[in-house]
Picture (cartoon, rainbow, N blue to C red):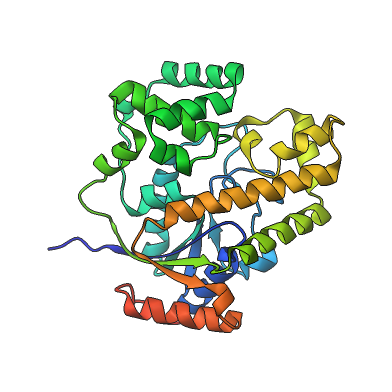
Amino acid sequence: MEKRKIPLLAVVGPTASGKTAVGAALAEEYGGEVVSADSMQIYKGLDIASAKPTKEEMRGIPHHLIGIVDMDKKFSVADYKELAEKTIADIDKRGKLPILVGGTGLYVDSLIDNISFDSADTDGSVRERLYSEANSVGAEALHKRLAEIDPETAALVSPNNVVRVVRALEIWELTGTRFSDYKRQNKENESGYNVCMIGLNYKDREKLYDRINKRVTVMAEKGLADECKAVYDSEDLGTVCQAIGYKELIPYFRNEMPLEECLDKIRRNSRRYAKRQLTWFRRDERINWLYLDEINNFYEIIKICKKIVAKSEILCYNKM
């Protein structure tokens, strides 16, 4: 007998595209629970900087894998995949529809495509040496090396994302295989999920950029600088030091740059991040794209999403 696949609805797209609102609304429609696929929201702290959904935005829907890891801890893609698989299995077991919501493409791919991570392709000494190099010569230098080895991966990963850059270089040193090829080679035979993917975007890129710019302004009004200063003073940085919205404020904390100039850098880096996210997700032909600037209102967005779900093979769920 063929093994049953767990139905999984995924809402993906760039930062500030409205994934949180759509994911929560679809969870209401189908009796679902949200599983985050965001590499920064998984950490405790920096709630404003990582745009964690508020209680109001969650709309009473359970949201999983948000704020569960101490910010000084390293957390790998393999760690995420293991946690997400357990969480989704539990949601499904309770008769709910798991809804994956997030913009970290590597998290989404590792889970949906069942990419295996062989412990033989991991070496702590190599990894620590690469981290030391990043500290001594700078993250840009490591990213430049990755670009020479694996331009495909380098184009999708920010130079500031030291964890991902180091992981790609670690695999290259240990296996002689580029990370982009490694991902393709290490997809297991079959995914455990029956997936319907919805992508959110804007035809007019400037409209997305305007949303990003305005969101940074709102973050600042909510106390972004105070939140990040508390983390900065604690020196309990860990992985979060790479987060967009935190690292750009460090010159302000050191009295080296005015606040508004730092906020402009957050806006710029967030726009660049959105562009990389779109580059990543556009490769996936399974994604049903919605261009939100061509849709009149939120009700219509959800209506179109429901039509997409209706055409998929995950409709063992009725509206609750």
